[in-house]
Length: 155
Image (cartoon, rainbow, N blue to C red; front, side, top):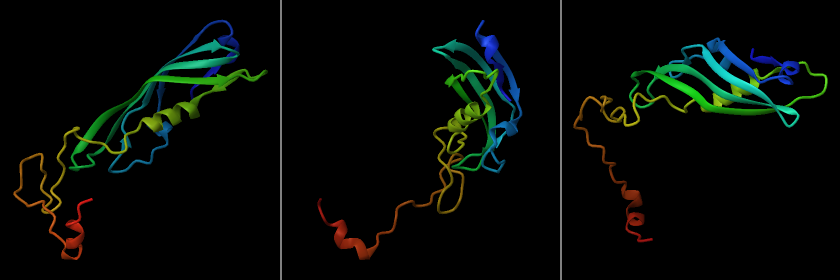
């Protein structure tokens, strides 16, 4: 849990550094995506306008399969410029920001892990890894005679 004392915040900024277990992100491990390292955070909480502004960096390492060629992938995932504002209600002595940090990290997760941005993926005909070389399969779609007349339209 990532918490800090609001009473101490009145006196000085608070540095929050540490690690949370991979389970902190609540991502169900699968072949396509697993959180492979603890979540590291380096944050600074400051008092501003009757609330708290928390800024900093949160990061982890992801593992899984490339979404195009199924090769194993390890990839860093980070929120480089985290910025969260919290209202501090009177009488609140401690503020838990875990859920908000979790949400920001979840939004930073990629839709699909890729071994490289220019991954060519697998051939849809024979299944060969096109990163290793061309397989020679024709990727042209066969024409459908039922739509032939529509293909002739010039719109």
